[in-house]
Image (cartoon, rainbow, N blue to C red; front, side, top):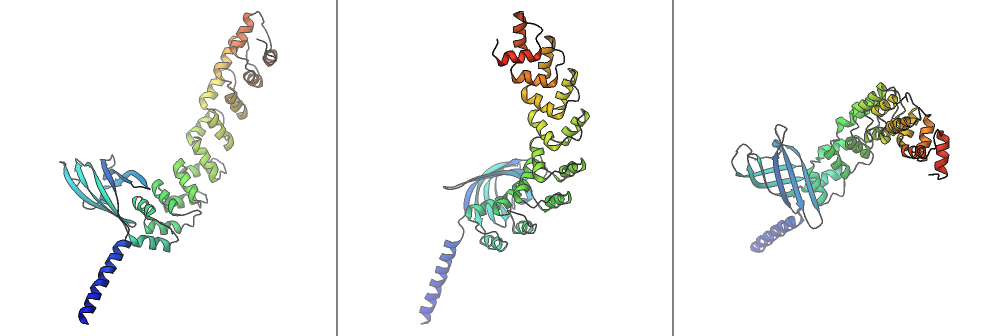
Length: 342
């Protein structure tokens, strides 16, 4: 009886061990590379992983302290073995280094406790691929808890990964809020980082007397309406321009240089809308100079736009003059083009 009990105990232990092994997350394998960085105490580190249904490559600057057991001091070629430990799992790395640079393979083992801890924070549905990405980007339980405490709209595991990639953290969020922005949208925070909407930029826009919402701030950065551009336009005589018009300036190429070149042709202090029209229709300083040489001195800005719309070019005017048709008004030239007179 005692012998049967002992056998049953051993079988139970074996079955439990087998079940534990079968239920444990399977390790992911891949390649790593390491290169020197210009930043002291850091390296350029890449992880590349490929499977039947998943391909992933991540390259970024890592602190040397992240690689436990790494011998980076030896200059000669040598084998290395080191570990990267994250809340989501562990990377066991083998390979070689030569003068601080090298490559090798890694095996990733997911930590089974991670998904349970994340689920407790409301982040559910983390599969093996997602857990691997969260380990690569170091989405820790503490970071997830910190972000959950910011009460952000649209916060999920994908956004947590994006936050780590682009550097969205509590400090950034609080500084944006101190600058007067809601900073409560996960997607918008990532946009801010991608396009360079900083707390400093938000404060500067406000100091200029503009009431710009978050979407408008992103537009300003996308189109390059920077403090430097605004200051240069103010120096050219266009200060306190409407934000929409500033964006139009950037879209259509109205620059301080363009304004200066127009002034040299005698067109100063044009309405902002007219500057945009000039750019849209191709009324350039070069065009004005050419028609001036053909006898058309300082036409009204509206007439210049009409000429471009109806293709009254310097070449067309010159061809008419060569035929003896001279001293035509701008209106007559436009009328001739409308009616197809060549």
